[in-house]
Length: 337
Image 1 (cartoon, rainbow, N blue to C red):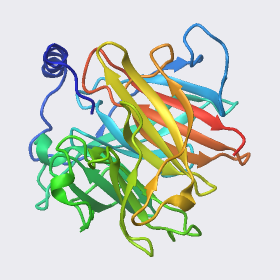
Image 2 (cartoon, one colour):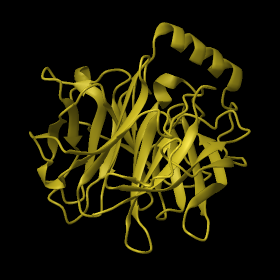
Image 3 (tube, helix red, strand yellow):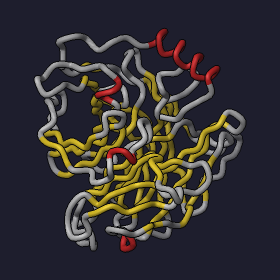
């Protein structure tokens, strides 16, 4: 989650108190709700163009629901390409649903949406932000790996839609704990391809925990390249998610925010073969957007291949439980891949 000035924070807190309530004590069952979707047909405001560098805009939507906890969406991954999904919120919830599409394959809505509060080791709902600030998410098979901030940890869970239980294990995140900033911890958890030099290993990248040179701490968590690496930080942008593409490259979602310019979004592509223990990696910027585009606080990212073999990119926003922000879903085709 990004930080604001004191006045802005006060406004956001006021909005939060008005719109949210605590998770139901002792109830860890799934909560279903209808999601109302409002289409985004033009990505650049006031323009019908669809090409933005190597990205072709497919479509998007703003999402709203009559549920207090429908907010703060962070990590996001598809369980089926472009259809069923799983996610985590930085307020301590799992969420599940399905993207609805029209005859042309454009996203038009969300169906079968449920949320469930996270539980502690005893299976008890825990609503303390310190323990449930879930940010990064990776999925392989029936296992989810989640990165948490504040109480920094990377934990594994069995995927049971509507019946999620406590964590099944933890991974050594390798980065020294005293190098992790409280609200700038592990925002990216991603599985490398099995046939890559990382041999299917999970990687973890922090949002903005930096070394003395200003580089961002990250780690390969297992496999032949296990160890710490760094990501070059450019300007005021922080890393909010990342995913490996079909060709093995790493796509990073980045966000910048200040009161003068508002929020910005950027995508960076990193050669997957450059990632490994002791290395400092960088990549090509594919696209940058500001408030002239239909963006908000973009935090979640996934990549998938559609039925025509095209690489698609899906991005979601975190509204911070604020009436000033929106829950968005945006989708692009990555051309020339």
